[in-house]
Image (tube, rainbow, N blue to C red; front, side, top):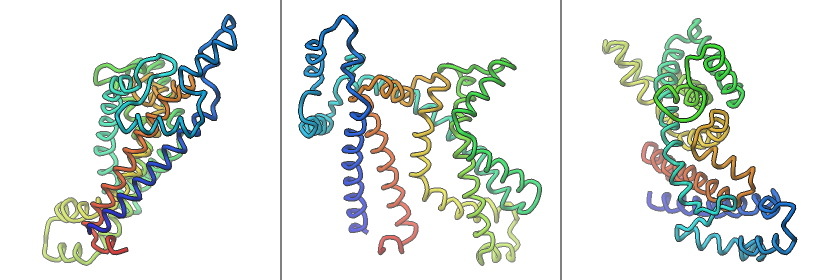
Length: 305
């Protein structure tokens, strides 16, 4: 088991290093941010001075080495646009994103799990067909389009829900639902499929033969084992949640990390963008590593592959 953990840990470190290289190079393909920091009155010499101040006049390999060294010490640099420490901006924006993600997870738990279980138990019925329709629509509708439609209906036409910014509980409803719908569809379909496999297993048949109540058979035995498949894809769900959050936070003007990333890309803010992308990438890689280790404990065959 230790050998398996060490191997997966080494693979995760390599993935993180490759991610940092790709992100570091990719953000520099968007253009030179010094042009965004000058106006018509500035001279070329002043622009070159800005490049020197930002460290952009050095070889890209040297820039990357400096970036990695500072990053490992917790120094993420200073924002090109605001000239404030990137670390401070991340700290200011992280809690709104965490709260929005938590609200989305609540939506997933209270809708995807019951719908997935009911769809499996009522296979072939109208309820199952309705759940399949929700799953297809949830994975087909673009999150930014869905957010705009919800704003138009519930914010503009009906005027019953706030559509911008972070405030009370009602401010979470539209952005959290928009963020969670894609994952609701994915979890529901996966749970339904896993439930159907478990329901045909011998131990479920034995539990019924023993005369256990149907609710206990389903919720205590079948659901517990079906959730293993959902846990296995936990890293994928985290990655999807982070990716979708960027679009959702922009649409709903949510003051989180997703909106900060978007503004950084628009402003060619190299330190800000590369820090946020690497941090979120590290989060996804860490979650995947944790899920792999957890699954190895649940299924001993995995650790010997």
